[in-house]
Structure formats: C-alpha cells, structure tokens
Amino acid sequence: MFDKLRTSLNRLRITITGRELTASDIDRTFDEIETDLLGSDMSIDVIEFLKNDLKLRLIKSESRGDKRQYVVDSLRSSIMTIFDSIPPVDLHSLMGSYRPFVITLLGINGTGKTTTLAKLAYKFKHEGLKVVVAAADTYRAGAIEQLTSHTEKLGVKLITQPYGTDAAALSRDAVSFARSNLYDVVLLDTAGRMQTNLNLLQELEKIVRVSKSNFSIFIADALAGNDMLSEATTFMGRPGFDGSIVTKVDADAKGGSLVNLAWITKKPILYLGTGQNYGDLVQFNPAWIMSRLF
Image (cartoon, rainbow, N blue to C red):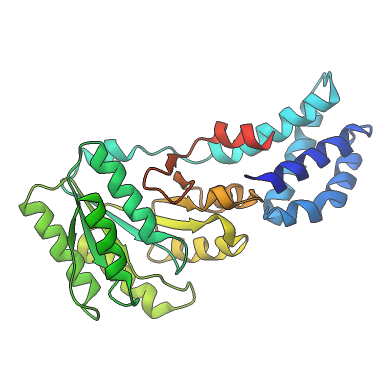
C-alpha cells in the first residue's frame, strides 16, 4: 500500500541528504525526482508545494542537525500541512441535529459507490442507528439488484422503484418514509455520472435539492490517479459535496492520489475503503498515512 510514493519520497530523501542542502540543491533534486513523484500519482502542484515548503523550512531553520532526519521531518510536516488544512467533521455530531440525516453518495461509474454505501449502512447499523437506503440509481442495469442483495444481507430497509423512475422523486419518498417511521439515516445511492455529462450532473443537483440532503459524499477511486482530480473538481462545482471517501486503498500501490484529493478539495476525507467486506471501511487518519509513507 502506497509503495510507489514511499519509494519516491525515500529516493528524494537519499538524494537531497547527499548534497549540501541549499535551495539550488533542493531545486535540482526535485527536478531529478519529479518523474518518480508524478508516477506516484502526485500532482505537479503538490510537488511544487513540497519543494517550496522544504526551501522555506531550510531558510527558517537555524540548526538542521542530522540532515537525513531533517529532510524526513520536513517532508512529513509538509504533507501533514496539507491534511491539517482540512476542517474536521464529525458526522455523528451533525446527525444529532437532523432526523433523519440524509446522505447522498456521488461519483462516476466504477468507483465503488454502491459497495461503499453498503459499508456505511453496515457501520451505522452496528452503531445502533436505524438506516434506510434509497435505490436512486434508476439508470444502470443491475444497480437495483445489486443494492437489493446488499440490503438483504445487512437487514436494512430499501426503498426502490422500477428502472426509469424519477430519481429525485424516489429520493423524496425515501426521506418521507424515514421521517414517518423514525429512521435515523437515509443513504441515497445515485447513478454514476461522467464528469463531462452536464445533464446528468443537473439531475444530481435536483436529487440533492428535492431530498434536502444534509451531507453529500464524493466517492473517489484511489486507482484513478490524476483523473480523480478532474472528477473531484467538477463535482465540487455541481452539485457540490461536503466530504469524500476513497475506495480501493488496499489495491493502491502509488499513494499520491490521497494527498492530491486533500490538496484540491480542502474537504474532509471521511473514510478509506480497505477491502471487499462490509467492515473494511476505516476512518481516515493522517498519522496512519504518514506511518506508511515514512
């Protein structure tokens, strides 16, 4: 997990500590290692930030001591600065203000949106919350059947209508059902949208508006590389989202996409998908990421 980024950062550390550690040495080293970092899915903007932040720390530092440890600490601090710039969010605290609490899952096809919804349903149910799921993806063949299978295994209520049903109306009905029957959480599964399809993005906006969604989550695929950035940027614009979940982290040998997502969205990363089982959804923890990169 994150092998490629860890290797690239280690090579960066080794190369820099073999030099005088001047600003020009840092520039030269980053130029040499840039291809490696890009190959780790780290964006050019993040690379530039790491380089300039390291130079700034160099200027401000009166005593660097062990060069190796100095560089490691500086790189770690720079990446933590990116994660720390994101305001924290406590979903459970937010849930206390609404009943039901409506969560909409957004993202393009193939990111693991429906499976992630099932993991959230499993998590919330085991925390003692009463959960209802709405099959608002009324377009993709097999989507309703997939969600039906998950909810039957989990013992969770599913609201569904035939394919072609207006997804916004279905979502509104699910919220009304949840309110009447004292459910705590409504999870809306939406159709996967290609980020260039304006009409479908407008339909997502309608779902969010009509359901009066309290929190929208962008589902990001760790294996999508820099495509994740364009997808996240588009969904930030419309319909917008409040946080993200990164899937397939267990299969991600690169690692840069997580840093990129934090950098570009400035929105909380809530959870990481780390496997195929319902319990394989772990809370995002920057310290956990750092322990695997350094």
